[in-house]
Image (tube, rainbow over all chains, first blue to last red; front, side, top):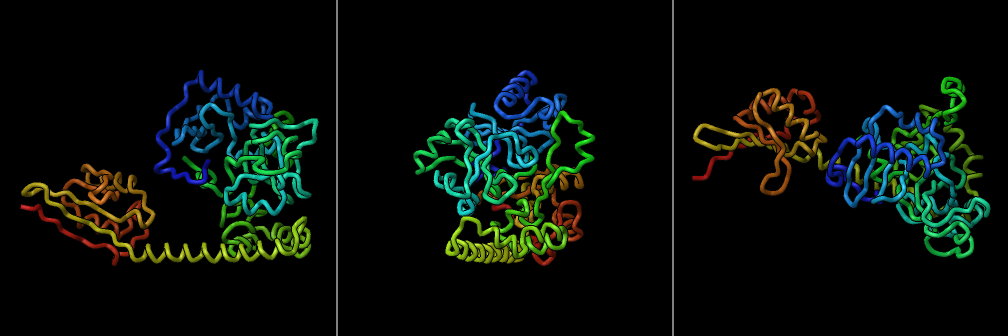
Length: 184
Length: 197
């Protein structure tokens, strides 16, 4: 999504968000992310007003004091930015890819199933299985921090069973243009 | 990296404190990912200088051994080759950019609008990483005239300042006033454009 993203041409405007809408965003995020309200309060204090940065292709980035916090595509789920996820790694459920996949991931490729099912990869056990279309943090074998944020295209059980083709679509990864956008 | 204890104490048990993540100043990645970036050698130097403990953790012999992990030797060598190639490519790119920067010209053009009314168009500042909007604002303030960023006939951005201020603009660029930094004097030229009869 942010493979080619030029702030000068792709951002169409910045606006303040109405407080009623801010409230609904806050509620939506609290229900979507694995975060308690106190921790979220330190990410986004109640008193602070957030700015909506509208971008091409219906991407909305929400920024606090010019620092992008999370973004959304159409009315889809909210994704934290990678920098926010590094600070609070528990926000999203985690999947892990093996070392061989890192190179492709950093070039912006979607993650194929075998990367998760091989020895270096990791998927949640059957009792915590994720359904399809769930935002996930993608970590890499032997690394501490998340490397990308993606959305599952198959449920994690299906990834194990099918073991072929795209398992997780990458939304934003380390070194893409959203990563480069530190201030808006 | 790890959260410091005092932070946890200050924040209390309830809200979980953020993890302070160290980012490489060369490639902006967390240092563990430098090896996949395009400036590994520079990143290594930086880390060795700033955080020798981390350098040992990521680049010591054992670390390299364990990193092999599930990959075969073949994959590993391929990865290394790719990394070297990528690095060389990035360097060449940076070089080319630098050369282009040195070769690019800043044009200060005096354009006649009426018999004794002129505007000054400044073109090519963006090649020196100058924010055109900010520069236009600076001109507007110093000369107390209108100044804006517009597209010229070729579709390139330029700054148009009302009034004949070409010499003053030249002086400002030479003296590196405000945001007008990093333009060598030799790369600035003054041009005059007469109104066609």
